[in-house]
Image (cartoon, rainbow, N blue to C red; front, side):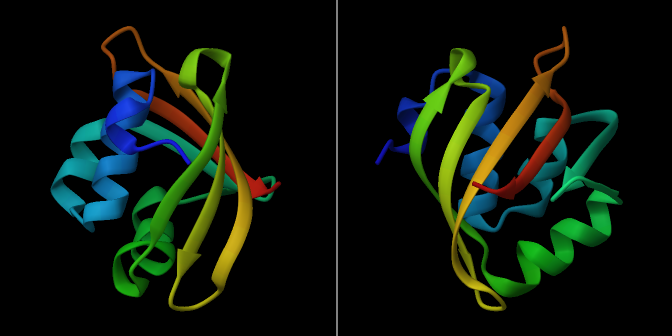
Length: 107
């Protein structure tokens, strides 16, 4: 497992820290304006998705591996709704160092 502080990409590191802390403000700060996301190949509204899948259900990311300069992760993700899932995450980081898009789904 890779500790969040050891993740290679600073934007992804901020995202994982925010998720694991349940910190909505830090999560929003990690995202670029107009950021987009998809879950299992379907685009979703980030705000409602994050509330349902992260913040209201104690979402937590245990990073197993990273690739692509830290912008692709394999994660054991858990929350109170679904339990633990082996997931893949891919991040697009803007020139401003914030996440412009993330995609997640079953690994």
